[in-house]
Length: 239
Image (cartoon, rainbow, N blue to C red; front, side, top):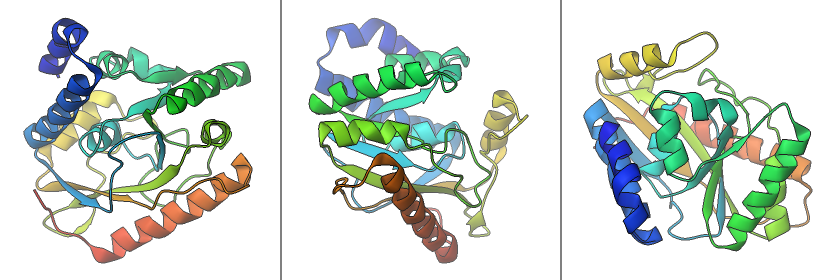
């Protein structure tokens, strides 16, 4: 994490956009290796934008996992900006922050998302708005989907789950839920044996005339179905 901070602070100002993206991808993959977390990717991550990724949310580690599959800019709750180290890294990677309690701020972020998609960026959101326990996907907040509708940009559903590589069953080692502390979650992740992140990408889709609420319901059902398939497959660790 400190190496990532050093790159963002001293190296990024001298690099092109593509060079920065490549270094973020390499950094995320290296961090997963240091944490001892395997990565299994199903489907095709986007290679270029514009694209909006919509994923279920389990842990702070979700961000690293998605960055290890493709470079994307996240839209996150404003609290993340204040997290030790992780907040600085997220800001350096171009994260857009939103105050969840403010409708006016959400409109501001949607405007910036629409502009970023129009410029060809890949953005990632967690429509649940908070982390779940790895069970059923929580109800979606569909406001941010308006950016893809306004920009006429495609979207990919993303299903994410952590597995115990020895037992082949879902693991909560990386969970970050409720009163759990960030440091406690990081420690459990470090202590876990053969933890594997499995991330599945759906096919790119357009709104197709759907409003954001209808699209949000459809996406939640799609991600739930994708995650059910991951659970039943009991996938092993793959490096």
